[in-house]
Picture 1: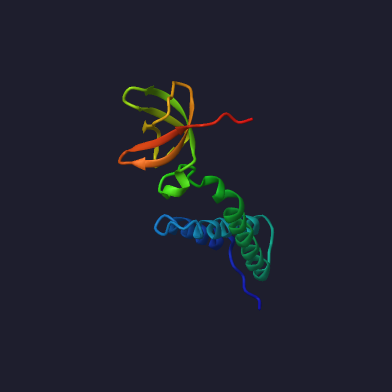
Picture 2 (picture 1 turned 135 degrees about the horizontal axis):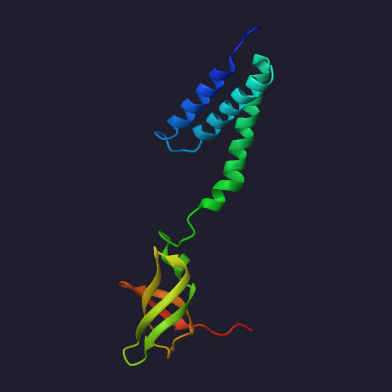
Length: 153
């Protein structure tokens, strides 16, 4: 099998796959395209046989896909609580920004946004003051029901 592929074929293939990724946003074609482009560059610098080029392309593609799914993608995941179920939000603690004990209403801020917001209206039967830590116990309409958090020992 004496097939000769020019280096620029790989570069064109790589750029086409990378461009196709814009139409099919899976991040799968991107890494295969990057691998093809790298094979093209390496083929331009050294003389690789067609079998070596195919092996290099396959190996680089697998390595890049594994790196993407194992290390890169998990770090890019949305760290908000948006779309979380009620059970997942209950128990999250926040910092009371303001609270009127007469109306039993106020505002709270969370370090991680819940449903896209880091500040929420709250209601509580507990006596709360600005700076207290409070924990979500339920939802009521657009408000969160909270209770005063116990100090951690």
